[in-house]
Length: 279
Image 1: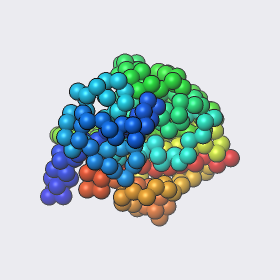
Image 2: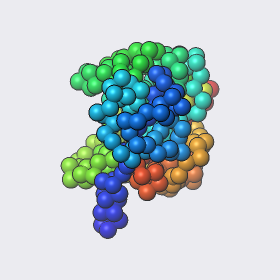
Image 3: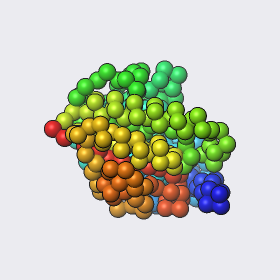
Image 4: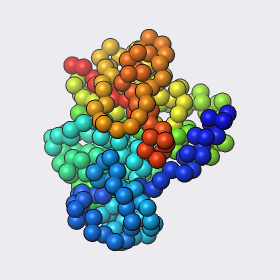
């Protein structure tokens, strides 16, 4: 219990960050901006906010910057190099922080498909427009049953979750039922997301929660039921811990999945796994 309270306190104290949108400016050009007091981070286009309110700045309103946690920004980087010919799908894209980062990393080339539920599309479209993402298609497919086979080079599933790593009061709104239902949804979504990948493609699975049932067990489910699903190393030099070990894939999951806690980056907690679909 003491550790849980300590974790909650660390979430509440997490810093604010912004991403410089290199579709509209450069990091050097933005460095002369005087609206905010900023500090560099381990990721060149991400900055910690030392003073000021990003959402009230002209830079935010004109799409030069976007508010995004540092750990969230790591998720698209887990793919590795983005190719100008890539077709990329974000299965649960709204409100669009990771999706618009993907467009930025793709330099508005290739095709980036943002999918989500109808009621979540307006917030997604607003961020896509503000940040100048031009290589986009928006869809409203059921993430549990996309009905798409072997179409995408990269798929991001930042899955709906209990958000225990990002919201200090999330602990108060979850119950035993949600801890059963949520992993079931996530397993259906990861299965459908993996089916959408081309052979040789990469799936990144992430959540902003801490439970083993929503993280390692979901990855384990995919690996056990798909011989062509192979976990890969996340080749980034950033602070993190290994995943939890359990079951048939314990050593592999522990070695190759990431758990990022608030203490690592002064940001929210995240789980990240990188999975390749073999040919």
